[in-house]
Image 1 (cartoon, one colour):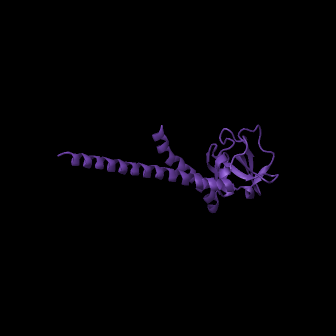
Image 2 (cartoon, rainbow, N blue to C red):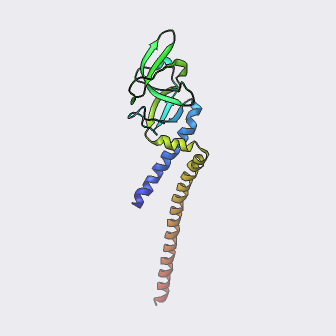
Image 3 (cartoon, rainbow, N blue to C red):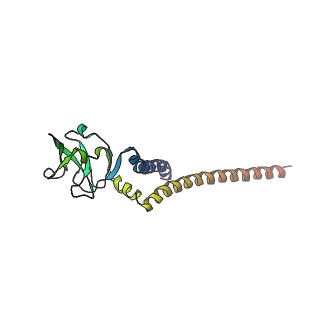
Length: 181
């Protein structure tokens, strides 16, 4: 079991660092990393899932795409599937949450489209949301550091133990040679 955990720790460390990096670096490239807050898109996007949204030209959005846009009431972002596109004098999108009975009671204009979901990771949204807090940021730096220190400390302890064992064996052999006439 110890060996399994030892081999798993670099994988966990790498995933943790990738998630933290993605959360903080994506906005610099116009991408967004968001957490799904409701079950309106289940089972495709479960509540608590992490979604990565890339900027997209509104005219490239098609029926079936999952887009993110601001709520008409403000304050939060909504991520729903496009169920119809109106190409009149103004480009409009009709959206619907997969788990909702009917389409949303409003349309989304081309200007409101923030981007298109390019991939999602279930349940990691909770971690991403936590990492965005000051305490979460500190922990996201501290935990990998402690894991690395622990691994290197264990290696150092093993090397020192091996050297000490070899030194004791050498002294014992030398003592035996001195006793032999």
